[in-house]
Image (cartoon, rainbow, N blue to C red; front, side, top):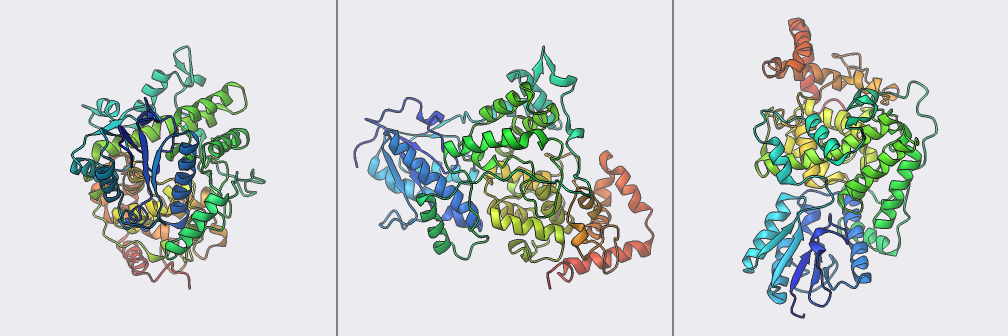
Amino acid sequence: MHHVRHLILVLGDQLDLEAAAFDGFDATHDAVWMAEAHEESTHVWSSKQRISLFLSAMRHFAQALRNAGRPLYYHRLDDTGPVASLDSLGAKLQADLTKLNPQRVVMTAPGDWRVFQQIEAAVEAAGLKLEVCEDRHFFTTVSEFAAHANGRKSLRLEYFYRELRQRYNILMDDGKPAGGQWNFDADNREAFGPQGPGPVPARVTFEPDALTQEVIALVNTRFADHPGTLDSFAWPVTRSQALKALQRFIDERLPLFGRYEDALWPGEPWLYHSHLSSAMNLKLLSAHEVVQAVEAAYRSGHAPLQSAEGFIRQILGWREYVRGIYWMQMPSYIERNALNAEEELPSWFWTGQTDMACLRDAITQTLEHGYAHHIQRLMVTGLYALLLGVRPQQVHAWYLSVYVDAVEWVELPNTLGMSQYGDGGLMASKPYVATGKYIQRMGGPCKGCRYDPALREGERACPYTTLYWDFLMRHETLLAKNPRMALQVKNVVRMTDSQKQAVTLRADAIRRGEVGVAQ
């Protein structure tokens, strides 16, 4: 190994040749370091889809680095030798730093607190300094978010989002928001109606090349007992594939995205969603270019404002906001459990073997593709865990395991905060709770289900509906203090003792696993 001036560390979610860590890169003196580490697939029980996406994208990026003439030290999971036997990223890095002895170690800000701690410790143990560069994929920096948050009693996305729209002049006309209002959320909630969505454009797929097939074979062997399957693996794993996926979304799905953002339909996993989050979170696409493309589609008359604004709010607003909260609140955030939820996650979350049609649909699809759209995540799987009272740390571990776009900075606040209300209202102004009627109204597969969303007690009662009333009863004191929950709590007060008892009995049976498990 030759003497290295700057060693640039690249993590599996930093696959960008233009990343800040490469500024001033000189191929005659500098080198790049990447490693596949067993622990990254096992610290949570990662699904085969997620492991394969990361490994395939990393190996393709290694190829891009070599093509660009950048010297690279790369550890594969299937390598042999002393470094290969080390389990963690930190251990592999420490072993190499001893040999390479670079003057400086440089990286772009990572997306996972745990990994950052490991890397810092390894660099420190080698007696070196770690230089961390800002991640230019985002519109804001973590310190800008902290400055925005400073002195505010409560954080709300809307104000942060408006600030960024103005600062970057996005969807603005003469200093005012396009269309005369900031937010078209009210226009993002239509259901398909009884006739369903009709023909939906085909999902953009990428046939696994030799490199990806090699990864799939490795994952099927080495992680054989992990959840999910790889028969349908077709995610973008390179920059050019990601750009093609972006173009296809703009052309085919964006026009109807806004209208049907919250809609469900049985057997239709893809609908009008973008499926770009995994490419963005791997940094194959930047937030800037995605937002620009969507705004351009609105300006040219290709997509309506409700779609462009609804999508841009997710990227410019929500995604930046979530990241700010993660880095401000870690490491204690991951321990939060404001509702003192202590139930275990039902084991069928790992198999999809439940007789509740909406959950069976969402979980089966998740295990098959590593994907579910946001209403399936928030109002099907997440809502069920919240109403059941599952420990938020278990819910977090599941989401981080099964979704291809799950990197902890974005997944943890969305799951523990937004979905499970585990942070007591930092992310969301109230718990997102509803009965089975909500799922039915949004087009869920209730027709083919043995349970009835209208019933809250008895054998045919929808577990969501039973657990909704049980949740309100259990948390009545806490929820009564929340102005946005007052109406819902009033309905509990109107219930008779025998109605309450019937709900509790049925909820207890659900918690014991006597209801909802596929026979």
